Length: 142
Image (tube, rainbow, N blue to C red):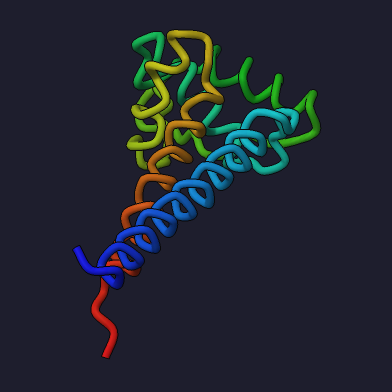
């Protein structure tokens, strides 16, 4: 190998390490933000997702009047409103939100770790960031 090839190989190895460090720091920051901040539900959407995950994890895709009333009262005691449960039939209420995120969080709710769903999403962000930075590094420059 000539000296230029050795220098290029060393430089690329150094850049890969730098990319890994940047991505690792990003993951640690994202995880810290997801777990260190206290649980806050300032918007009605937050409450709807909270009850949606809780109800869906118990196999309740719809709730009855009593359950909806109790959940709305609990939300009201916290100073907010539960607006996203809509009546669909007599004594039946359903979540108006698309259930994708709710279904995603069910395994974490069952494990008692609902906030770790956000950590997994942050990990996905880290992987995508790493792939994009690696591609950027490998692009041919004119």
